[in-house]
Image (tube, rainbow, N blue to C red; front, side):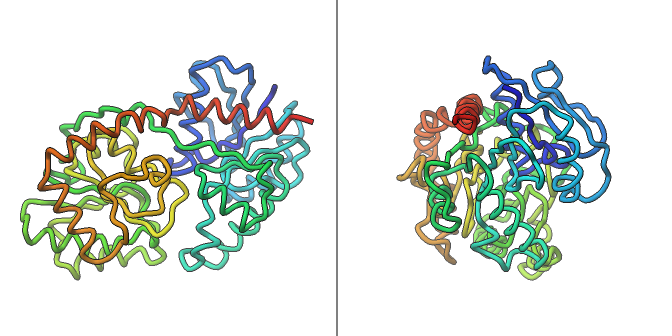
Length: 368
């Protein structure tokens, strides 16, 4: 079986989709699946660990224009010269004019649920491409059961065409050791960590308000946001920090690579992941894999994986979060029990397991 993969999300600073695809490819490299993989990239050739051993053949378009132009118009022309049985599109969209069966992953429907988080053009681009992909793909994959339900209800996807291929936890995050060089990005211990792209729906303003309460009691504590600032108004984050008089207590290193992120997890007192909507929400699970507790709200895949997780607030409200943070900081014995309890839960979140699910979904797409 010859499968093409739209791999452009791996070219830039990898966040959600890019990390998902990199994880799946890393999992595929660990077992004999009988599939020939061709990875299609937009830009210039570069080195990546997943295709160093020849398991995946990379193809580079050397196209410097907009990613959507490449995906929807340049790539289809390139694909016509390939002998493929199937195309895997891991980033919400299927290119126009593709002549082979397709499988798409739609990670969430944030652009349907929270239109205010997107500019008008970006909103309708995402909506139109995702709606079309859900309609034309042979199989529609997602990362959690609750998003599969949303796809069924919102887009009318037949459950027989739906599949779940969840996120895994990379090896960098399993028992990661705190790195000694964190000072190079202005971080010192002790600190609380917010990992992941900074989005409006992840409530950075509320996080800062809750931290301000705790900071008055713990003058040595820092708060670190490790992720690219993608707020609708990016300057608002700095404004909030200044309003709360937290300039010396909050660090904003922006996007950090996975090895550095693992070190941050390992060194943090705890992590915070507060969001009004997520497809999966991998950072709290990565945090626990690094033996660091996570304070979370409801609505994550963690709800399905670990329904009675103890450091979850029932409502993301003023006062509830800071109370839970104090509980974690003040009860080391309870934290140790939770971290031990996490081990069997996290053992199921492995990229090889997810990659086996992916191959099965691809096989289903080729069934008559």
